[in-house]
Structure formats: C-alpha cells, structure tokens
Image 1 (tube, one colour):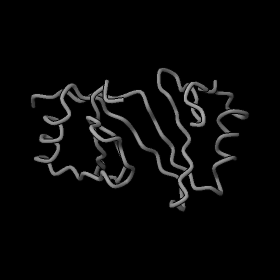
Image 2 (cartoon, helix red, strand yellow):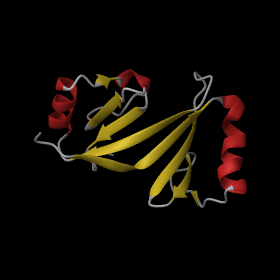
Image 3 (tube, rainbow, N blue to C red):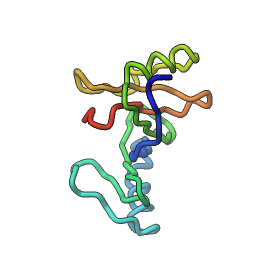
Image 4 (cartoon, rainbow, N blue to C red):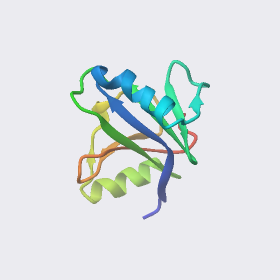
Length: 120
C-alpha cells in the first residue's frame, strides 16, 4: 500500500438530544475532563493525547462513537480500502468541498473519518 494509515487525535460521540446535556455533564462534572473551548460552540474535552467531541445528533436514537484515521495520501488510502471491501459512507456527515478525506465504516459499523492531517 502506498499510503500509510494511523490513528488520529479526534474521537466523536454522536449523542441524541435526550442524552446530550447529561453526556456533557458526565465528562465535565463527574469525570472532570478539561474542556476544549477553542472551537465553540463545539463541545470537546482533552482525553489524554486525544480530543473527545460530544456532538448532538438529532437523527440518532442512541449514541455512537466515531474515530479518526490520518493518512499521508487520502486517494491512495481510499483506493486501498475500496479494494479491501471497506464500505464508504460519506453521506453520514457532509465534509467541506475539496476536503482530503472521507467516511468509512469498520466491519462492526464503527464510523471512521480518514483524512490527510492538513485537510482542515
């Protein structure tokens, strides 16, 4: 494979509205994670070397965890993943025009963003 794929820094928990505020309070007040305020109104917390984002997802009935992969060459990685039968699911959340990345799912239906580190 020409492109290297490795773990990213972002973890997102997509939470339905009826669980959103309680989920934020859990990580902020009960666990005591340090908030990330630089991307307000996005709600995030320092999670060791990672960033944990809590996203309100009105279309969901239960929470999901979404993970991130980095690659040095998104097109090569997408080609490799496609040949391996990995499902693309770019419709789950729109990305900006020209963004060097996309969405895939693992065999266990965990959503992953795969992107070049400088895609944002």
